[in-house]
Length: 364
Image 1: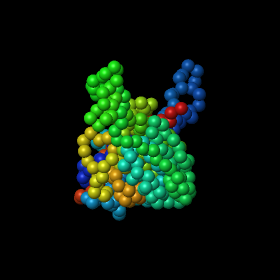
Image 2: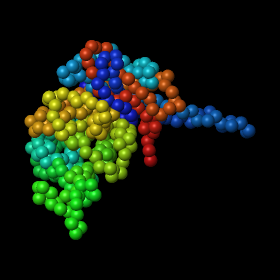
Image 3: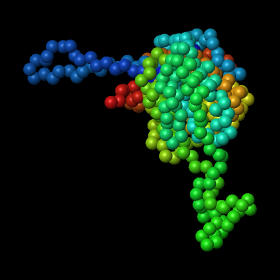
């Protein structure tokens, strides 16, 4: 039932008829040269006729009030609007799709989180089937490809079993500071009450380049087939350094241009199992999920992590797919909003909220 191509949007949970929406788009541009014979001497040939057909594909996740996937909806239960103009749904599918996934794991977690993730790793393979292709990547300062794409689930299991995650303590000294170093005697810091010199601020310096890691994973998924759901399966505490080569906005645009959704598991705190965490000022791992039509889960315990892994892949695989060709939308602007509504009470929708025309044009 639930993910495609070149568009920008944001994900949200919405009530019926208010919804948040969409997700993907694919465009096909054809140029038809005039077939008229050459004009008489002195006449100009007419300019080429450019005919552009834009097919916007909108994968939609629908859940009930308990957060469970909702099956059995029909085409007539949905409405799609582009730039607030109602569109005709031309194609509709509720069929599950195979996955192309990059499992992207933070390799610089706090000690406690790293221990819980390490114990749960092999359970990730259980969420993928024989039609799914999966690659494994870790990251800290730089992303490292541990295993290339493979349909072999046993190979994935073995790679996860052998993977040893790094970690860090929650607090380390980051260098001498005037405010924290205390009085000096002959250029040396006096001991603290604990017997340890006061040499630093006691903060951890983040080296995790989250944006670059997500961008790298998206590059791996870019060329995978459009008949598959392309996802990044991100396991992280959300920490991000200031030394990324790619900005957050640039990375989101790259994800949407290539029909890639991010499903994030935050390992810094726990919630009742399966419960979403809603707050203002979302961390980047949550923003990546919401803006690409994915989802975010929270757990810091091995047992819940193991259950969440299969839940993530089930949700990504089982989405409704709606397709429309836009009409009455402005050609003068690049971004177009999309809204999806479902004609049933007490349901929520996760999907992208728009697409960019420019992302439909292949870049050299």
